[in-house]
Image (cartoon, rainbow, N blue to C red; front, side, top):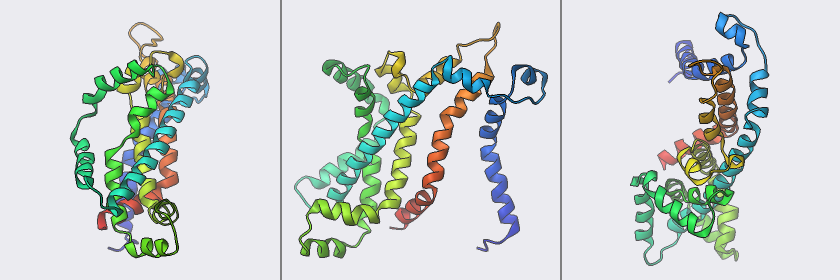
Length: 269
């Protein structure tokens, strides 16, 4: 396919703008003043963002979401990478069964584990804590499955050469598998981060303290803020929504090259 085709480039640009239109429109609305918004005019201000951060505690919600999503991504990808390495490189009793059980978790709706997780954390006293938000989301069967398939495509001769030089399995994982699997790991890291960032049900159930609320819970609460009879403060809601989506967009831009490469190579292998 000719990449210099102007019609294909124009079609791709149009499709990109079409998908970005809701984001751009929300940013546009979030920057409007109240008078300009209801009069259909254009007058820009940052007051809506300042209100969201100061009056409605969105600065704290943003910090909570970053902490929870960051730790879930770090711990989840670390666990998934080690599990994928074990499934891809070692043969041990029950290995096929354990891998099948890991894949089978993909068919279980997350809401089924909601009550068991709640009761378990209640018994050990981890409700209303960061640990209660993080631990149930650390295990990710899809990340382990995806990384296992990717690692299987890496030549075993590299492992064998390292073992002959006296390397341990942990060194092989850290110095050979992880660098070569960087595109796949980056792809899964973004996937795990986005999944946890957009999580709403579990944070709503697991915490009742306002200082532990995440952005999704805070955003839902804004719909209760009415500037008048039967009205919703859409300027404030759009400002809060922009605060919610910008970290995800930034994360995508940072790993976009690895993301495309990881998905493509994973599909080929």
